[in-house]
Length: 238
Image 1 (cartoon, rainbow, N blue to C red):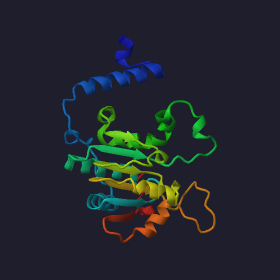
Image 2 (image 1 turned 90 degrees about the horizontal axis):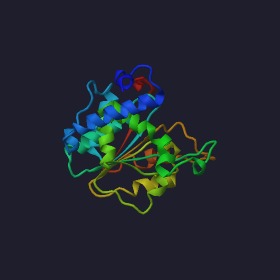
Image 3 (image 1 turned 90 degrees about the vertical axis):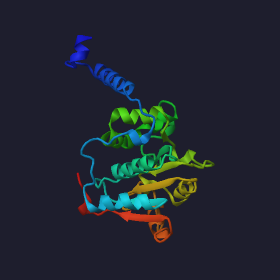
């Protein structure tokens, strides 16, 4: 116990157990039941005008399509906008994370574990950014209370998501049909944020075929309640 308390010369397993212990103690001190009581970590600010603009676009629209290269902060800005929306509207009770599962060298069907364990590697970027935004304990609190939920894109068919902020990342790997499936899930009092890098895709496209994100930028550019936002190379912040 002394060795655990000091945190020195610990094995990886001991460190993980110590982290879980500290998190459990911090969670016990949480006496709030509302998202608006969660505070952002110190230093959370938008890094440039493009990030600030995206926050306002998401606030003002039901569906926002975002494209830009890696490193511009798409995910953390989208999560910040989502948390702002939940703080300002108590009717919004869920934060839905999804991504297209594009298989490369290994089929997801042969990965070990249940569905949540199979998709965990694909969802990790959401949680690393949530922890940067509100900390590990607050992120775990939202998970424990089912405020954060994961939904594999292919399993969303037939569902309508009311009172939710729905975020689809890596949308450049979504087919036009797949993206249509996603946006048709939008329910009452909900918002959608669809993001990715329209210039890169792992889809095996042929001829004039487009990814769902590319198609969306052309199709929905001037539709009321729907907005698009593009980051440029100069907006990279890492």
